[in-house]
Image (tube, rainbow, N blue to C red; front, side, top):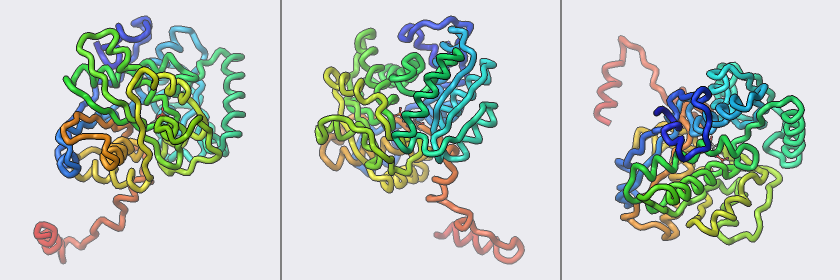
Length: 367
Ligand SMILES: *Cc1c(COP(=O)(O)O)cnc(C)c1O
């Protein structure tokens, strides 16, 4: 069985006619070769969700969401996205021959927008949408109204809006639980918290239905500039609050409104949940470390989990022998602008072949 459908017994049923598999899921779980040693962690793993077909774990969501929309005979997919949800939905909609209309978060990186356009989706970039809470609420109301009236499937990668699609994301937890005998902590980046909630629910479901149970502590990692969940989980703040303006520069995690936080707090009563807050600059440093010390090419959001591991280590929440998994959520190709923090055209050496190529190569060998 292909893709997320390998676990169809653990998911709500969808007719086989609508199950599209483009290579999503079954992503590698690789053991750290160098970063673990540097941090003094013996069993650090990376779950490579960047290797999904459209470049992020959102393909697991889209595979499920588009399958449902087809089965329900919906007219079109109507979605909101800062990039990766849109790219994933655009890809699976293309395969399903469904129309896909996407309202973009203001400032979504053009590479992500372009990917959606290339897959043939119809796009609207809306000023202040996703950045300003008031504007976001208004646009959401409009979308709800239109989806109802025109029988479209409204897809937003959060349980609050698209519980069916989010089921597909639980397969990340199934795959980890299936593969590792022991897992002590899983670190998960969070914007609106849908991914984190899926992983919490996925492990809970696995424990209920499958004998070989693992119940790791699940860390919700947020950038300080978008702390809508972490401080509440940490007990530093009593109730979740939407933030007026998200200040993190990490694409995909700028979710100022409250999406799945209430459901997360409910689950945290029965699951071991914890959190970490990280600085953007540490995340960018982790992105570079993943590329240069592990050969893992991810976008900044994909490096947030590792920054969370460093933070948890600093405050004594993990031990050297713990089995730790970081979810690397999205591909480096997604965000060209972010890559310029690591390498620009000016870093490349331009030489004249006849005069100094040989000399420069020797200099690099000896460096
Ligand atoms: C969507 C996304 C996230 C966060 O997901 P939420 O459900 O909003 O918390 C993290 N990383 C990447 C690459 C994403 O695309």
